Image 1 (spheres, rainbow, N blue to C red):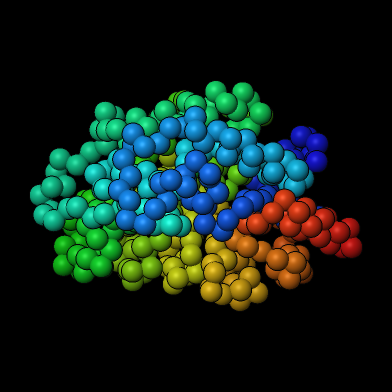
Image 2 (tube, rainbow, N blue to C red; image 1 turned 180 degrees about the horizontal axis):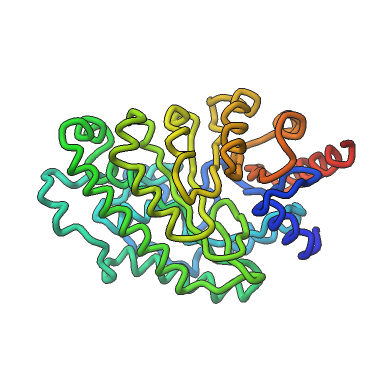
Length: 360
């Protein structure tokens, strides 16, 4: 297990762009489908089941969080485990009126908005049961952590994803052409709600080692942080993304000094627009199941770094992927967030990364 000082040193080097012997490494241990990593959620992950906030007891999840914390410590990772409200819930969509349903692997949000005049009264209600459940989750986790690990932001889908969830994904690109002003207005409402949720979370969490942490990716930051995703940017042209959604991303990035955006390879055609956003610090790129390999995505990784951004590579990386990163990318501002099925697999990959560093 690494000493605390060494882990903080690697994080500081990541943020300051200092040269390192290898990329930072962290692990998410368990199922590739993050909703399935929690035993307490098994009764919820039933196909067709409608999920309501009263079905979630945050204290019932504590054994799952404790197990994951202990596993990542055993792996000897550079990252610090971060607990976040159960990441299987589409929290933002639920808080903004979507009904939540389940499959055996994840949860989904049912579209509800049929008429654009419904945007006028759409706001985040602090009395919304889903919002109150979110805050309850945060408070329970803070109490359980007792300063041993930070509590941070779970997956909160970004403006384009929230718009698509509320009006329907198939309708989203059509409305972007037919009613762009309404799409941008709804994205603005989604952005304001998103920032309010993160702001509330930050008021309830405590500092960890003088800083905070980007949840889900378990990346420590010297000050407050925020991250978001724009998966449905894949449904828009670069011009439509720039005109309708990009300003929302800029507003989110400007809200905190440390920030990140999650990107799938399916959105690479808008990567230039994303990289041009002022205030953006970090771009996280998924290695998706069935998607391009780490080697295939080297041009995009290099583009991110050349733009002065930090890079997170997330996914079920293997030893070949580690070798590609070590040989082909700069030894600075890169963090590998690896999904490993077991602690033993994580330890093996951690050993491999350290061995590769000593050979160079």
